[in-house]
Length: 343
Image (cartoon, rainbow, N blue to C red):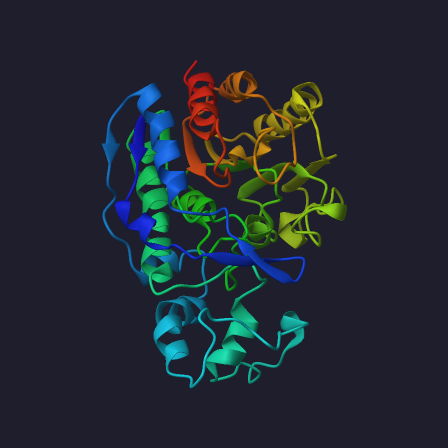
């Protein structure tokens, strides 16, 4: 197994995000990296840094206007007199899909309302560089799979699966798993994305919702009382050409490994029926019982069981790190999942 990691990803270090209308300490911190690397060390194998990527590669799945916004946001924001520390919106582009073409503002405040989807995507001076490095990590991982590696782990931080083509949300700025899947698909692979994060991968779903060439499957806590609230319901199956190529499997909070495995069997059967020859696993370790978000109740040894179940597909796989926040067993949970995938 090869691990891909860029140390630049440590540089994005916001202090707070908005929960229930008030600022709270953010769990998506650089310290996650060292916990995850400890899990990698338990498995072994080389750790390589990716080459940098720029707008053209990111634009495979992201709107160029959004890329321009994120790359210049900090500098433009700091020019505003008496400004808040972190860029944020005071007006939102509700009904964005129905806005007229001329309805895109020049104002950076207005653009924040267009591109920052919620209160959990704080921007710092180093967010652009860190998010770009995270995307580069996933892109290089996809390249390694294309060159014959059977299992690659992309340690991506910040995560990506809540980021849509032109919107940041949920600690996510660029959609790393979607970018990897697009690279693999353009190279001729029949690619499925399996998202096992405790939160629904709404950004990934949105990017591929109208397409039949990439299958998106997500197992997550039911959004009726859990972030992202508005997406992740079983009725969402895709649209137009993409109808039938999106599968959501929402489960109740507190789900343990046995019912989780039943849902995973359904997910894996759909991947097999799709005829996938390559898998992108959006690996959210926040399904753990001791994760701060308290969504599911998966124990450390059970991550290996889940990994073995996924390995039964016998597909070349790129594991893209999504959630999983500081807890006593974060590194052990990663090692357990990877051990199962290597079985």
